[in-house]
Figure: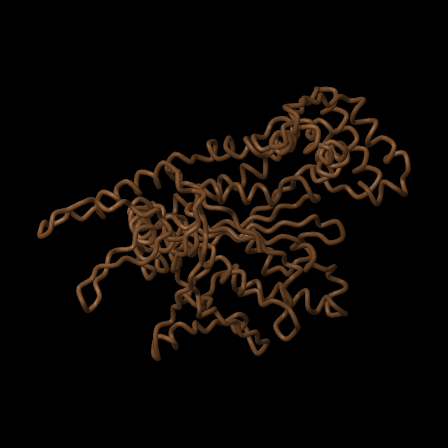
Length: 483
């Protein structure tokens, strides 16, 4: 399962299909038809929310099948789409599922995974809202560790547990005179040092909660919905005692502040509210990306023979989920009527028509993604905000090595990647990673030494690229293993 990190929520009204396509263009080159299809599907979800009355429930999502070779952007389009609207998103491989009765994962688990992602997404948003209050509470707890409060024994003698801080010199006082308590002044002085980062190198021992009641999974093939049904032992432990244990950890002050802030934020949020909102968001905004769907589709003539029995069984198990059903999760029942399903596959051996007719009908929108040309590979290396060339620049700059890509080098890399895709399996833009690793192999190895004396600049030219890659491509047997 692949999940996306949380991102700020965007104004849904402003996300018109044109705006969605423009946003996807920042990260993905070409594939205009696929971008338009997902943009319309996403906008239709917002439109459905604006409909009042019973008609809203009648509008079903328009699920999509993306057809195209590997490495052309199918997964990235779906992932960026979900991140754009901060929607719960999971990516699953259809080939990992098997028909009920066989050893393997139950298709219902994709919905449970979606709810788990949704819970984390909503929890992170709620924690961000109380971040300021949580940091203040964590700071107070940390100051209590650095300057423990004074206590008095049975005889009335005041004492303080050791804190590791240097003791302040005692101020002279006359007999019978009440000496002012310096704790308030010392605490504020410590607070200033803490906020200024002057105590960051110090280690402290803090008391944090430990998850002592793990979620127990029970695997069963006795029927649908039984896989990964969980029993939360904390519910049983609460009947006999506290389900949380405390554990002492010795960490540096910045780490202690982060741990305490996270613990305080968890105390400030209402988990029941989080779970309710997470279930609602998974039902109304969830996106499930089913990759490799062509692997469970077989030629119709071969159905009923060998492994195709299980393939068709997976399709039939998947069908009610895509159509709309209720799945039991540890957060309660979840309906899949309005979850958007995006399926993808290369369909080299099979065809979309090899899927069972009922499943085909649940994916009314089909878009074909084009193979990447050499010109597309050049654009992929230069245009996206997170392009591979920018990634490698940032990685090597951490070692003090600054690289500069010349246009002829970019063209050479694209040409060699296109040539390798023609000689071997066509893996699309993923071939660029193998080529770039080969080009920068020696530089990446030597970077810590050459960058230690000061910033070192390297210009990557076409000659530099050819020297490191062309020799491999000239030997077909060797290129199969290296590229």
